Amino acid sequence: MHKKPKVLETKEVARSRLFCVEELHLEFSNGAKRVYERLKAGGSGAVMVVAINDKDEVLLIREYAAGVHDYELALPKGLVESDEPVLEAANRELMEETGYGARELTLLKVISLAPGYLSHRMHVILARDLYEQKLEGDEPEPIEVVPYPLAKLSTLVQQEDFTEARSIAALYMANEYLRQ
Amino acid sequence: MHKKPKVLETKEVARSRLFCVEELHLEFSNGAKRVYERLKAGGSGAVMVVAINDKDEVLLIREYAAGVHDYELALPKGLVESDEPVLEAANRELMEETGYGARELTLLKVISLAPGYLSHRMHVILARDLYEQKLEGDEPEPIEVVPYPLAKLSTLVQQEDFTEARSIAALYMANEYLRQ
Image 1 (spheres, rainbow over the protein chains, first blue to last red):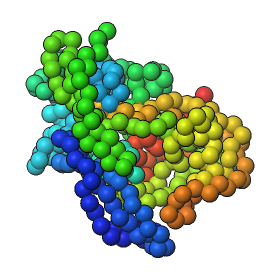
Image 2: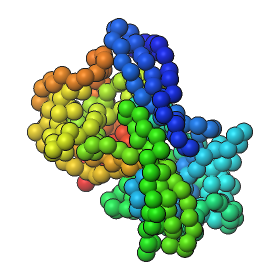
Image 3: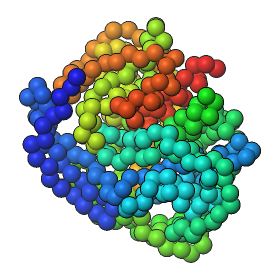
Image 4: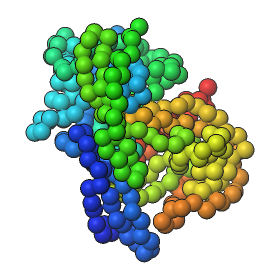
């Protein structure tokens, strides 16, 4: 198939508290040269949790999103801490953001966000057999938990405050997995 | 509902050729103060195209993705040029990346990527009634076009070289729209 382009040079060109921009000098297998920029994700990856309660509702959260300066409905998510197993990270984030833990955790898929310029990868995890368990997070204000019937997924996707591609993808994948 | 946090100050803290990082000093309605960082998207937004041919196949492309330094399968996409109507941008990107244009273009949804720290928005457009029409793009090497049966979406989602959350979300939404 395709031979990956050769990386002639990498260079950090900008850095802030959270972000690091890297310049990639590439030579493609046909000889074409290009300079690309990408954001490097730090840390140990991220998790996104599709938690289903005993009423077949998925637990959504409504939270302030700085990128679009508005409140958005989405799935619970967060960063994996160093040396933390991925499923444990999913359960911790679920407890912090929704007040529930899960006895059954299943990895559905590892997704990318915008692989052209982001190195970020996110583990999508299905959480079932829930129990009440609140862990304190570091949120500036209480997160609103919104249980939503999974059977109404197509209505949810049409809502204007539910736009996140990762959450849409994760919910459709979980829905398909549960139907099989 | 929620009152948006007050923006006390915004400050550019890093900039490269492609990216601009902005620091946001916020005061939430409960008085809590936080400093967030976000990436500002430049320009006029982006488009992603679900193009369906007369065999009910979706046109995927396989292209080098610098963020993950690998070849990835995904939907055709690109940036909207200034003053360019969104549907025209979708058709132009489709011609550049797949060699087909579409007589019927339908906006399905405007999605976000990671609204917590990205301001980026992407228009998901369904393209039907295709005709052959190649436009030259600025790609370093020819893009491989991969027609894929829409009926096998659940198999596609399990492939390791198909990971992009935006493409997964767009395909499920298009599939649902076409079935209704």
